[in-house]
Amino acid sequence: MENFTPIGALLGGLLIGLSAVIMLAVMGRIAGISGILGGMLTLKTPDRAWRLLFLFGLIVGAGLFAVLGGNVSEININPFEFSESTQTIMLVLGGLLVGFGTQMGSGCTSGHGVCGLGRFSRRSLVATVTFFGTAALVVAVIRLGTGG
Image (cartoon, rainbow, N blue to C red; front, side, top):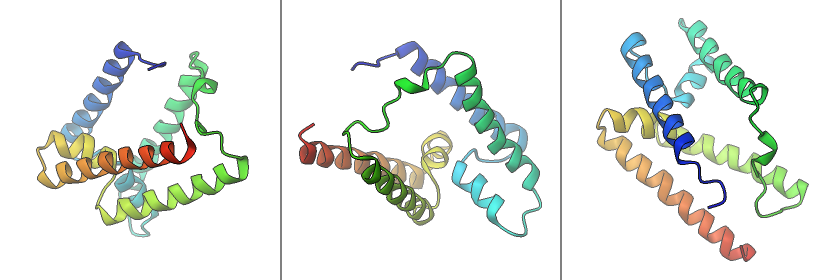
């Protein structure tokens, strides 16, 4: 692995877990991004303010990463070197499929994988195993197809 950073990965995982615990303990809310965003898109959402602040915090956090010296250019979002038009189509299609899967699975990886598993939810275990199993299969198929 070229980017193996165990300390950074451990600290990042601890921060994500701690954030989920704090949100559940303080607000009684699950830190599932799709649920938070979905609530913003509902017309009659009385608790829109905290959702907006949460999403704003995600954007600010990404900005802080760049400002504090995080090198975003090292993140390879096109490892198979697809053309720009193919990459754009794949990103849009991927986004639509993730949205469909999130709706079908009643939550996303953060909701099921971080919060649901932490609450010992059987449904979240099945969902998380399905997410990661499917992801591994897709990567294997793409690598076989591209010779990577």
